[in-house]
Image (cartoon, rainbow, N blue to C red; front, side, top):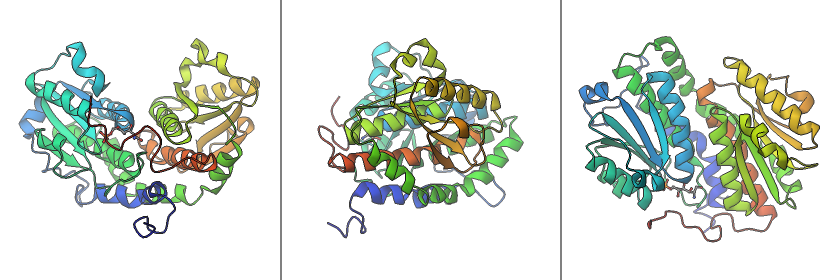
Length: 372
Ligand code: AGP
């Protein structure tokens, strides 16, 4: 009913709008006044976490994209080797796991069969399993050694939005917590990131307030068949997520690429007027990547692509090559997906509406996939 949707036409729109609160709620009570993480609810003894020598993340779909970003955060902040794998592939390749492996299973519903089977396999091999989940008491947290709940509230729309942002927050918390218990050398950076996390909900809110041009752009592209998405580092999973949203909602051919792969094949797809969304890393910090992406944008534009550029406020280098420029607030590199994903959600939702598709219940899809 309209009341359930809080006055929005679709649950998805309501859930997109709820993201600042979902993010804030997921942080609530988990960082103390001194800026330390208090994750006592993660009932894996600190002595065990100190001995972990490998992290493996398993998940599907959108949760998998959160896991790809988590890998970068975990390796950067803790220096523990981490791999992220599609849950549906994991147990069929006889993965190497033992008592010192921490497996993180990410799932909104907590009922995804592929993810459940992967965590069962991991536990049989003696690994410890930490679930990141949005649904209290669901199967995945019940079968795990510990759980860190995301506090997104119920997500009804099939296309995941607020669950994704809170999965990212939970992953950052786990990465920072692992760093904290192991006495990582990134002390100052970790303190700075924790400070930035505290204000990140406001940044998400700010993005939501500037989405009208994105909706307009989406409507203008309703007749297109293909949209490509490019990104690097954390921007690559964001590109994959943007493409997944568009497939699910707009039933368009959408593909995400690592921008560095362009010249290894995908650039052959570029043709006049093809919309290409590019997620640009911050020009501060890892500026080498920034400059490389700017040349990618130049290259595809020279071949006639319609460039849709998502870039940090104040990034002037992209201006000459952007047919459409979507601004996002400045954040630390690893946190950028929290703000960069939001325009892609709005874009896909508006395109679905413009194409006359059912937004909350896309064809052929179920909210949780409880079969393998
Ligand atoms: C996201 O928009 C999808 N509907 C889907 O990829 C989903 O993220 C995936 O099925 C995993 O679901 P889960 O988080 O409930 O395990």
